Length: 388
View (cartoon, rainbow, N blue to C red):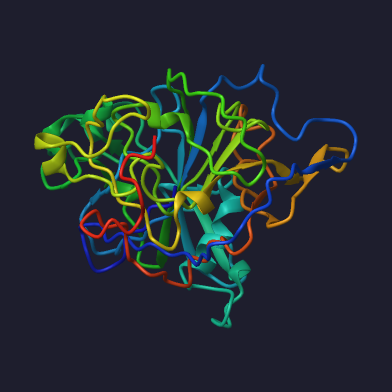
């Protein structure tokens, strides 16, 4: 998941970016090669219906107050927010994080470089070397500061660090997020506030979610569309354009991986639903049931439908030279979508680092804005409103 909040505004401005084309896929299986290991993580390591979500980046103005509204809930690992808040500063060869509230970044560092390039700060046509940026960890609030950050509307003097407040997830009170439309916020105090030389803040998260949902085993081949098991939850809002979600032992995939890469909405509800519809006439339902989804859902993007961006996949490359990987079938390519995303985080992310097969033409380019046309139920331009 990538969350992008542009400068100049206290409220978040969600900026999607992708480039995709529809392609016809072959239903043939992928060929497995190399010896040792397994292209899919062991079923003993991951429970069924487990997804991983990555929240990647947002920017804030150094002059802003110490609260940043977040337009979606951040993923939790058990009850903890497993995130690193990183700051980037252009310093040339002077790589220093030696100041209060900062330390040299380690967790999430591999993700920082593509994010900096995606934000247009370096690489590409900028003429700026991304290695000329220093990336620091912003220290989170702890002990008394943490209690004040998540509990006090006006924390006492000396409160320092950052915290995440989301009453719906059991973190903090509603009073603290009254100014945020979606009732989620990051609060920054003291040494956590951005320095004048810092041009980008990046939030990198890794978390697991499970759902008790008995979806039919449809045995999809590599490249076939898949249904994420999280859609069995009535409060699952669906994917966001910047998300990468990997599900293990997915019932809809014979190979076990349901790979949602930069897909918006729910597979089972192409037209989405508004808060008004949630309260009066629900339009989204748990697949194969009449249980209404209880949260708003974004409509799918016309140019990036679930048939292209939520598919059965396999790991086709990785850091282990002796690993066992697959060869992508006709109509798919091997893309390094998770390179550097998981190596910085502790187990159980083992087995996710590297490349996965995706349909040709579905690469995600954060620097090339897409069409924002969505599935419109008035025009019924995306087929059946309840495909499951």
